[in-house]
Length: 194
Image (cartoon, rainbow, N blue to C red; front, side, top):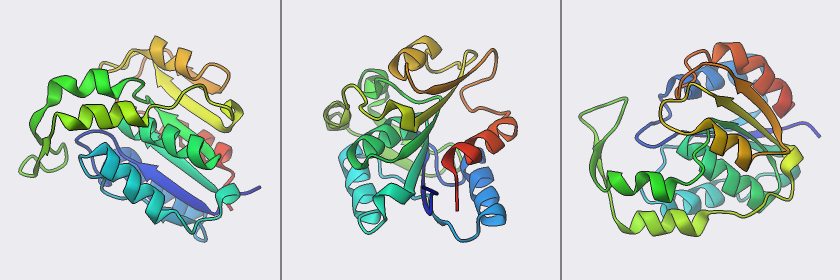
């Protein structure tokens, strides 16, 4: 079944202005203008982020929706896909953000606007733990693009978490997937956009 509704989730300290989000938005608009596209600015609270996503997609047709997520957005995308049984593309997805982000408690600034700040509260670590999903029943519905050169997350952990999914393991690369253009067609083909 083709995808008619696509959700894109950015990473920690990122925004809808990220390179990958903007490239995806442009490609969807140019090649699949009938697809509903939503790339919200996610609030710092994981609980609030998930509430926003579930409310914002509540009237979307579940079998025809898909989600793409990068880094922390990949963690959220996994939670959304597990909940609604939809396709998901994960770009260097965070596996244990409760562990990894515990050291970022305090004021943070946005990558795309250093003047824009937010506060990452201690309780957000528990909210991340609460969103952790167990084994993925629909593992065939996932595509993970994982760079061995990721300087932020451990590629082995990502590959292990999504074992059984379609995995594109890149020999080099970086956390941002700076060569995202080289993977865009594969992402779009997997999503099977209308």
